[in-house]
Image (cartoon, rainbow, N blue to C red; front, side, top):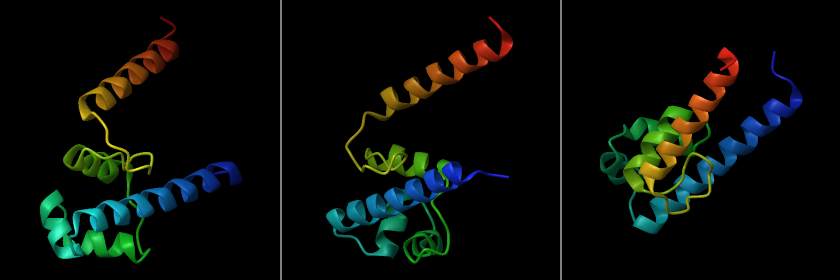
Length: 103
């Protein structure tokens, strides 16, 4: 069971991602259908995120970040170098794995 802190963080992340998604879509001047086509997602996914029916998953946030070059993972919508962002995640994963294995 998740504790309150974890739920609060998940809720905050979800709200930041949604706001970032809307901000980027609006800045691009695209409606939901055109935006979905541009990022290779379904219109239903975009609509369900924007109406609050579903949260933007980590996987979808990474896909959107890679396709837009804007950070939807942390919800800032700041321009990012996707290669650097992925490399950073790989290094963190390797570090955590080494700790778990006692290396």
